[in-house]
Amino acid sequence: MSRLRRIPTDVWFEPLIILIVGVGYLIWYNTTTFTSTEESSLAWSTLRATIGDHIKLTLVATAYVVVIAIPLGILLTRKTVQWLRPFVINVANIGQAAPALGLIVLLTFWLGTGFRTAVIGLVVYALLPILQNTIIGLGQVDARIIEASRGIGYSAVRTLVQVELPLAVPIILNGVRTALVILVGTATLSTFIGANSLGTLITTGVALFLPKLLVSGAVIVGLLAMTIDWLGRLVELAATPRGVNT
Image (cartoon, rainbow, N blue to C red; front, side, top):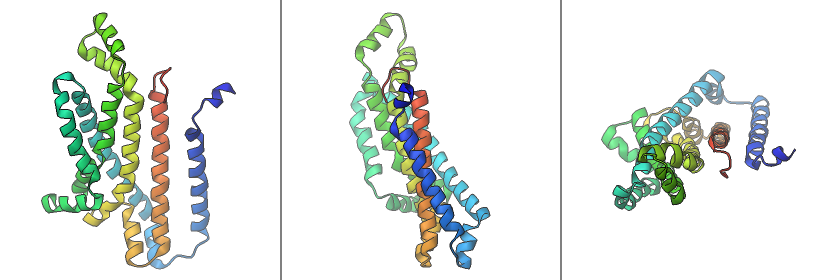
């Protein structure tokens, strides 16, 4: 019982909300009369492909963000290049501050439409949370611990890999989780540049005044975001070293 009390509230409460909303949507879906257009868009074969495209777009963008942001964040915490940190953070801030739709549309003038352009736009938009959390996570590691590891003969690289990064994992993973949730929502905008996603349901619902289609798209995106957030939280807890608070 004492072990159960230590489980963070969001670990069990969030899936409960997902379950309630999901069951509520399924009941509504099975008891609602749809138009032919709505039935075509919400047929399972079509919906499965749309959800798959949305998840693919989100995961590919996340992979690129992680590959770029974490090594860059590590580099910016090294003393030799710390002077570059304000400049890089300000550039990443521009990507975060720019309206997502405007950023994606502007990229089409340079790269054209389609999946690749959508991924690049999402990467630019979601870079800041992971980059910032990597810098903060490594920055909060006690300097005395680093000095002790160097004192027992660890090289700088070994200290980074075996001491600094494990202690920074909770904060870095929190940034990855934040970026994932941002990307799930923002990926809906990719429909404006020809990349298939759940945004297609929303835009079709708005354009043809089909509120049931609009509601379905919004609910599914919300459920997907909450599910990914919850799974990310589980990974965050599993990867956190014992004794480190999350």
